Each structure stands twice: as C-alpha cells, then as structure tokens.
Amino acid sequence: MTIAVLDRAKQRWDKLGAGIYAAVLSIVVLAASGLVGLLFHLPWLFPSLGPTVMLFFESPEQKASRPVNTLVGHGVGLAAGALCLYALGLQQQPSAAVGGLTPLHVLSGVLSVGLTTLVLTWLGVPHPPAGATTLIVSLGILSSPVQMLSMAGAIVLVTVLGWGLNALLGTRPAGGPGSPPVPPAGGRAPIPPG
Image (tube, rainbow, N blue to C red):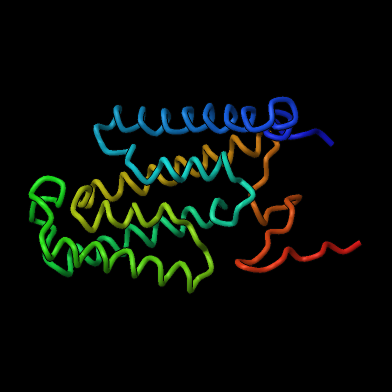
C-alpha cells in the first residue's frame, strides 16, 4: 500500500509539509477555474471557492469537505440566494457592494443564510463555504442567470479537480472507501470492526 503524498509531506515536514501540499493544490485548482473565467469572460473565480479548496486540501478528512457536501452545499446556497433575491425584487437593483446595503439587502442576506443552514443541516451535508455563496447571490453581487450558471460550473470544476487531485495523490475524502470513520458532531468515532 502506497502512502498518500499528503501523509508523506506531513511525515517529512510536519505542518509545513501539509501547508505546502494544501497551498500548491489550492493554487492549481483556483488557477484552473480562473483561467476558464478569463476564457469565457465570466465569474468562474469568486470568494466562496477559496474556503472550499482550503477544506479539500487542508482538511480532507472532514465531512464538510466531501464532494457531495460541496456540490449540495453550494447548490442549496445558490438556490436560496436566488430565491431571496428574486422574492424581494432585488434582481434589478444595484448590488449591496455597489449601491450600498439596504434593509431589503439585509433581509435577503440573512434569510438566504438561514435557509441554506436549515436545508444543509436537515440533509446532514454541512459545507460552511455555501454560506458565502448564498450571500454573493442574495446581496446581488453575482445575480444574473448567466453569472449563477457560471458559479455552478466553477463549483463543479473545482470539486472535480480538487478531489481528482486528492485521489490521484492518494488522499481519500471523509466517508469514502479506505478513509477513517468520521465522528458525528459532538460524538465519538465508531469503533471499526476487527
């Protein structure tokens, strides 16, 4: 059985090795997404991708960093943000970043994060960076259908590249085959049979 590159880096250089692994792969994945954005002149690089790739490469053993959590989390965040933005009639208004924060922007933002948190907790698929995704949309920062589709495309690309690189280098996501059991929130890890 071969040792994962991340584990070898930790063995050789401890936290520095883990940091180098995470930094290099974060740069590669975000650069790829940014390159697609440059080619299509669309926002394929936005703030919530940063914490997502950090989870992938700094904490691949956490449940929140699993590919399914990432895709469902950001998908719910996008949908909740769009729902709040459109329900409150903010889609034609300047974003909170451009026109200033209004009471409706505050309502849209807090409701979108609350809804995202509710759904992800109910489904049992935590992914905290989705809170940033929902705010980006609900505050009107990226809000047109084309921008939201490009966000979805970037999320899929970053997830495929991130976990593809981790798998290629021997790191498995939490809950995947060959990964250690993940303890439930506030609980102990199950004892493996044997």
